[in-house]
Length: 117
Length: 114
Image 1 (cartoon, chains in turn red, orange):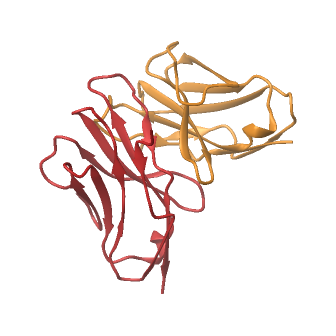
Image 2: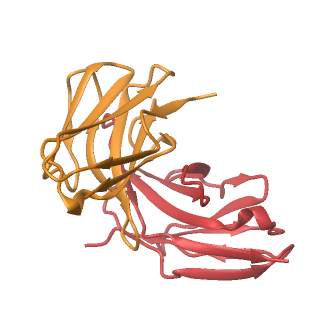
């Protein structure tokens, strides 16, 4: 069963507009982490933002915020004031388990964001 | 800054060759991971290691093996490369236990098997 679902293969936005990238997840664990990564065309994976399952407040990092709705099992990424350099592939990921050493991330299939001027 | 390096950005190998992909991290992280990335499939976990000489299979371990003799180095081995192993390979490391924080990725190795 797919654990991370990103339903938007591609998104298009104009510079300076806000954009929301969708992510839903499936887990029966109470303790888990949710992540967003950016992958530009150069290939490296850049960590953007993290939300723990017990965090009360939505995570924010600069122009990035994570809209965490636990009951709906969604963890959408919001990018405010888009820039041309935001054009990239974006991956949502989840880490499951409690106190387990080095459990790997489970990734979604990604959303390609294109920002135009 | 955390640094994860991979031995090659691009690699071309022939079918049947034994291939070594090396990954080194300089932050004394306990946990290291190998993923492969294919278009439309996202990243899939091949193997991970949470300590020296320890390894765990991921979702797609068939055709691969790994070695972790030193804490900073995690090697991925393709015993007999096949064309369906043409892919982007990404190594990651993390000091965090499950659900507690991010993984740091290397630049990736784009492997072509002909």
